[in-house]
Length: 197
Image (cartoon, rainbow, N blue to C red; front, side):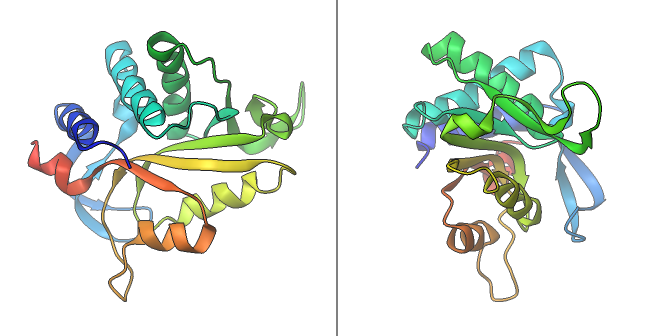
């Protein structure tokens, strides 16, 4: 579990950034919300550096630093993975390669749909993503990665758990864990971030 002090620090960081928006939003899940977490707004050097440091600290706290690679799902996970790799090296001396996917396979040059580290040789990956709502895109990522023989998913780290639940009242993050067997951790919850606003 991510230490409470680290979760609180990340919540404060996110709450003080432009990534937390208020208004009338329709989420990818189709649900309505008055708050939207847009990690794409974390685009300046200082913000990317700090965001990467929070994810890197979580990886070390969870003892995942011996994993083979970081994987950032397109698109917002790409910046997360790159920033985290830099922070792991800078702050912890951990040199972990990065891979990410293209939305469409490239037919020229090196081709393929995966860029960066060779996942067929990585052994294990940590998936980094911004937010979990109903988890739909997370299932797609897990299925894509399980197509690589011998590759295991050490964990999936998301920035914010929106704390949404299914029709039975069960948290989507718990449903994702139980249905996939993947360790899923959130650096902060929606409630933690909003308490810092």
